[in-house]
Image (cartoon, rainbow, N blue to C red; front, top):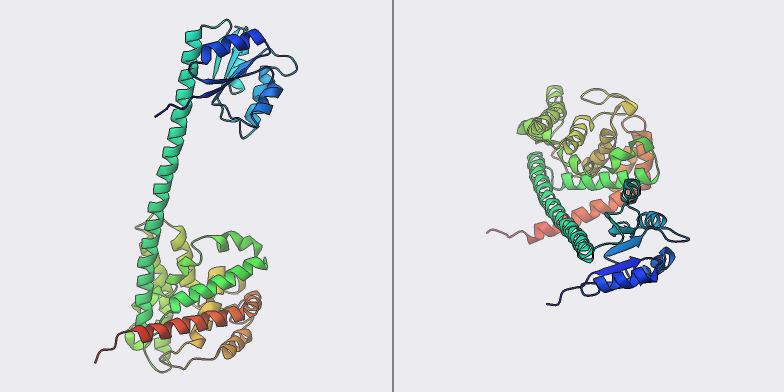
Length: 372
């Protein structure tokens, strides 16, 4: 395989120096002799060198001015520059190196020394590029591994949430539907720029995902209460309320075994506040108005809508229009008034999501094998 020759720019206003330098380098590199800094930048519009040999003392634009402009440009920022100069004082050398030069060679220079310096700096640059590629590949592997772990985490959490859902005799898909409703509400809330101070929370990648654990506390509620086909007694209702605080406890216990807190912090707020009401009559804490985290205010809308349009052991499903009417009726009492306005704006999207979920559920039932 033929070696790829490096491209060297030799920039000097002295034609003799250009000829000498070219002859020294020609056997090993493709050499471009250039008589000024201005002409060098013109040449760089067509060719990107691997290294620049730059004279310091040049008229109109000296070497220091050239390297300042070079390092200010994205294309030239990482090109190694070696200064060639008759100056041999430490101050001049320090100035050149501080401006970004990788080396400083005084004239007259030894041809073998010049070649060795160039070889060394091209090797360093090559190793830097190899390291960059390696790091990018390593970062890709880390990102892929992280993605796999996150997907596994979400799958485990979703399975746990769905197991709780099955105990509640829900017809299926409550967790997935409420997440979709929550996403619709969140997107509209951001688009309308309501509650701008909460945008970092709403834009967090774990915000909607974490909502799947909002009912995880129901795992502690007895089947006789969860599946009761009639109105709960006062004691049973008080027991049912504990699913919020128990859910928070479960999530806190999970948190003690992991360093990933963001997902679980969101999940705790969904689990602990989705039954709070705007007027302070909700549970478990009786929070009022904006005391209720945005998690609970949004989930209240999504959760109640889904409960209304779904069959439960104690009721038949309401129509979409009836459900909308009930939510609107709860504006300012059960629900955040601003979020009900948002809900009204996206009610058709809720209807479409619910219809699509119903279609998918029906198809799943049809596809299920029949046992005789």
